Image (cartoon, rainbow, N blue to C red):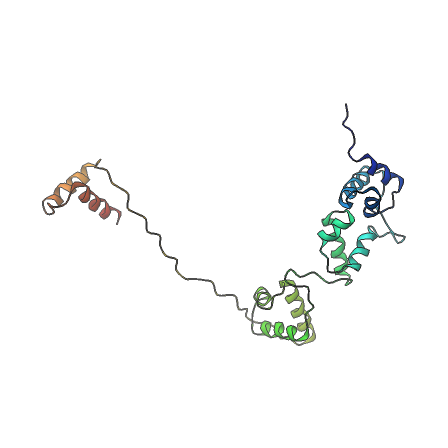
Length: 221
């Protein structure tokens, strides 16, 4: 006996309106766009409906439109609104970045790089600092710093860098953890017994355990 299909009303609505976006269907049915998107993905995989395309044949025009309207939103945020996977939205956004339609979202900050900050980045690079080091100093991603420097080198503002300054590693010696000496038993070997007896002639105020500790300490050295 087959199990009943989950969300049959979503399946029926997508089949009835195969070109509607998941967010539109979700508003009509009262579901989340993400749930409708998952159901639509199954129908696309089974061949029952096609991927949504515009007149020019561009797949997922709703993603392009959402990214253009909200260029600083993350792929996860847009995917949740449209009911699609964040990976798909990320792929579309990568194409738009490559085409120059939107800018890459920096992990550090979304504010644009002004002329003063650009000159600071170029100056640090000219002094020989690496891209990650400059990014850490100015609060920008490595990619953003690298793009600034590549453009500056192409325009002649930045001379070729011959040596790179890397951050100095922390070589401060760490304190050695002092561990207590293990308690020794009196199960001595023949050589240890002879050594202890020899020491007893000179150190009569020491116990056998103390003498054995001295003998074994010498052996470890």
